Structure formats: structure tokens, C-alpha cells
Length: 275
Ligand code: DGL
Image 1 (cartoon, rainbow, N blue to C red):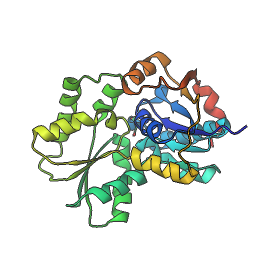
Image 2: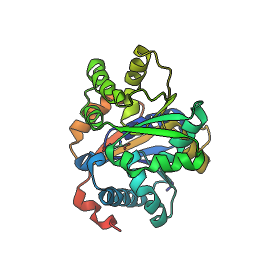
Image 3: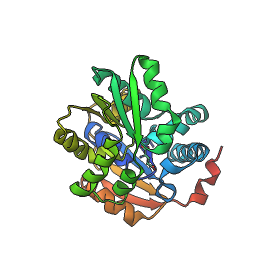
């Protein structure tokens, strides 16, 4: 039976920012979402660990029979996408190339700022991809671990998030960027906070959420049309505490039109996908 299924993978709730874009644009697929909350934050992990986890989850998705997987995590894309694509024989895409392309299209002064996890910043992946596309582009990056964790815990109150975001934005000093890449999928969930602070500071900054171009790439790869299917399903596969995940999830997406199920996945059950 054809499952018409797309897989989304993140360490936690960040991937929901990508799923949310897909829910708006794709009306004829079911979705599977893998949240590796037991092992998050990926941003503080070793490159090799993140590569391994990505390979495991892409194997898990292959067994589920997905048509395509979206690595809805910049950190996992940085360390796992290339190897996942050489191991598996079904389409797997990440968020870094689409995000970079979008930033190149937007910036006028060719000065781009990026916020991401420590591991993603230190991988240098965005520098590499962006400069490949346009060698004259300048990029400065700041990692924001506290922001990722506050979002994951569902602490989304404006004042609280604004204070954290402002502290990290201060690290850019007087760098006069015109474009900012939200290069951790957790951050688009609080994009309004970034906008509020830029507005308060009188700065005009174009925001890039890599999710939009990523989802449109998925639509092109699978040749997805406009027809709609009823009674669609979203299955969540969570390695950590399902209630904690749902607590934050309910603040981020409205899934009332879907048949939603939650499944706990034991880390030991991912062993068999190790490569
Ligand atoms: N949401 C993830 C990203 O886009 C990573 C968050 C984390 O686990 O540190 O990089």
C-alpha cells in the first residue's frame, strides 16, 4: 500500500517549525516526525555522535517507508546529511543549502548574520556553502544554546525570550548585516522576538527561515500536486518524555485537523540502524 509519507527529523521541537510550513503547503501526504529529545541538545554533542544519530533515524524512516526525509535540523544536516545520502537510496534533504540560497537571494549589502547551535556554527558549513555560492559574501555567526533550551522547554513568553535573544544579538556588535539566517530550526518559533528587537533598535533586517525553501524543494522532488487527501495522519516518534514534548508542541502547532499518534522509541531500538 502506498503510504504517501514524508519524514521530519530533529533533536526536539525545532523540527515543528519545518513541519508547520509543510502543513500549509502540502495537502496530500501523511507525516512522520522523529524527535530525538532523549539525546538533545545536539548543539553540544560531538560531530561523530550527530552523524551516527542522523544515520540511525534515516534508517528508521526508511523502514517506515517514507517517500522522502527532511532533516529538519541544521546541526544534523551539518554532520549527517552527506553520509545519509551516500548510505540510503531514497531522497533525503537538509535545511542548510535551501537556507543559504534564500539568504543569497535576500541580502543586498552581502553581509549576513547567522544564529545557530554551537556545533552547527563550529562545523563552518554555512560559511562553506554560502561562499561557494558567492565568494564576496560576509558571514558572522553567533551560537545561542540558552535560546534552544528555553524553546524546547516551552518557555515562550515574550519578555523571557526577548531578553535571551537580545543578549545573543548584542554579540554581533556593530556588524551592519541586512539579512539574518535562523539556522537552528528552534529559532523560527520565536522569529517575532528577533523582529521586535530589530525594530526597537531601528534596524532593518530580512529574516531567513530555511524551512520555506526546504519544503518547496521537497514538493519539487516528489512532484507534489494540489489535490487534497482526507483523514491525514501525523505520527510522532519521540525518544524522550512524550508529555514534555507535547507540552511545548501544543504551543507551536495546531494539529486538530489530523489523526495524531505518539510513539515512544527506545534508543536501543535504533542500534540496528548503526552504519
Ligand atoms: N534544532 C536543531 C538545529 O536546527 C538543534 C537543536 C539542538 O539539539 O541543539 O540545529
